[in-house]
Amino acid sequence: MPIVGINCKYRGNVSLQQCLDCETEVCNACVKTYRTAMFQNIEYRAKMISASMIFSCPLKTYLYATTDIYEDIEQLHWGSWRGSLIHGMLEKCGELDEEFLTEKRFYMTIKGVKISGKIDSLRYTKELQIIQGEEGQVFEVPMFDKTQGILYDYKTTAKIYKAYLPNEEHVKQLSIYVLLLKKAGIKVNRACLFYIDGKGTQPVWSGKDFEIIKQGKLLEMMAPRLKVLQKMFKENKPPEPEVSFLCDKKNKNKVVYCAVRHLCPAWAHEYKNRGKKQ
Image: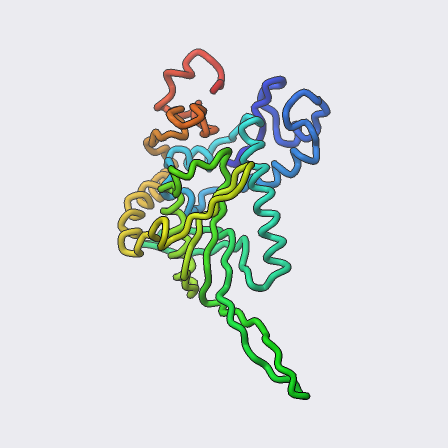
């Protein structure tokens, strides 16, 4: 199941529609238009295996696909708001400029497992072609090679810490996108992880700041992960959790970034005899 509602500190668990219908002006996301934009950015992938799932906690992936999730709105609004802004701009860019392919989902099958991934933006390689008019005029016309280009993956964060970039999981995910595009006949000449916070941006480039994982090594890394994901969906059985900085509070802000932490056996001792509270 997707995120189906909000864990409201004033009303308890309510559906997304109940949250939209609420006229209370006490929560941080009280404006209805703002909440509507946030909720539209929630994407339900069901039991489809996506690039972002492969190297994430498998239990989190399983719970998001099979359980009704009620998210704290203070946790939801920042990530969803940022996502709405970025993806809205990318969509417009793709509509107005033929140089870019944006918000496109690609598919591939590896050892019988279907994998999908939605790229943020691919900038096609551009060449100027000289064309002569009927009266001898010379024009430079941009021509786009749609079989190759530069891949951009946008990552929003509360604060950019340059010393920690790029995030290892982001490099793995980006490498899967490169493979997806290769399977579709598109060569990625360069790739950029483009980090954004409230104060600015920090591009991180392949070939300079990090290396795209080569296909052979990437497939080797993916194989056991795909086996776990395929098995858990086929048998409808939750896998073991993978504790990380997203749930153990051992991150820079000492907060929880997982909406299903209260359902995880690794943290059951913290939630025993009390309601969901992070």
